[in-house]
Amino acid sequence: MPRVEVLRTYLELTGPGALRPAPCPDPQARVERVFGCPPSFFRYLYVEVGRRYQWLDRLDWSDAQHADRLADPRVSLYLLTLAGAPAGYFELERDEDGGVQVAYFGLLQEFLGRGLGKYLLTHAAEEAFALGASRVWLHTCTLDDPAALPNYLARGFQKFKKETYTADIPNPSVSDSG
Image 1 (tube, rainbow, N blue to C red):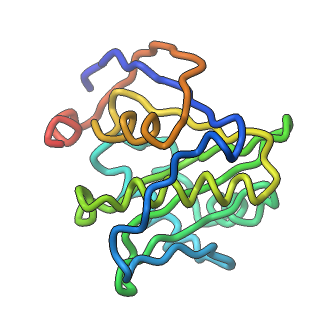
Image 2 (image 1 turned 135 degrees about the vertical axis):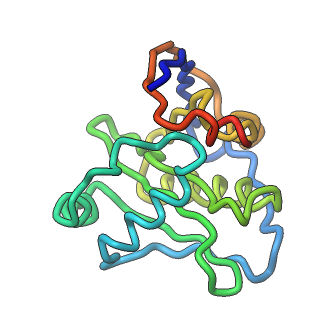
Image 3 (image 1 turned 90 degrees about the vertical axis):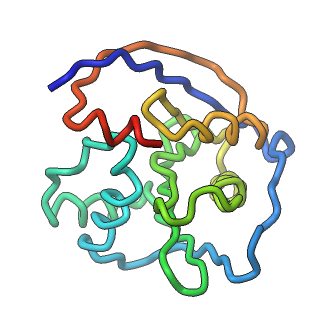
């Protein structure tokens, strides 16, 4: 398995006024909070959105682990659909300091390049502040889509920390294709 050096960047919005919202690019786009999500669908979203970006953390989770995550009162899941088809999702997690982390965020490959990521990130930040967040934060890395960091910055997120780590990449050609 090849090892690669990865730069992780942490970003935050310190209040709702810092958000620079993006409009919805398609009148058929909908974002809804998901309640009672089956672990199989949760896994599908994680696998399909993360496939190109080497999301590996949850690949070996059992249904029980996914169910526990979904049942955690600090965690909320939101689904983006376009004309009824799943297009992306985000997962929010409240932290002990009053903040809300955008723990996972992304689009299915077929929906990239349409401006939906800008809209979905806007929605994620708005939902996090609606949950009472003192700040909204997330992290991205050099394995993520090249459009991710520019989107975060364009929405008003500010960098607050960087770190470098080494990762084992089981399929480097996947992340190089985007």
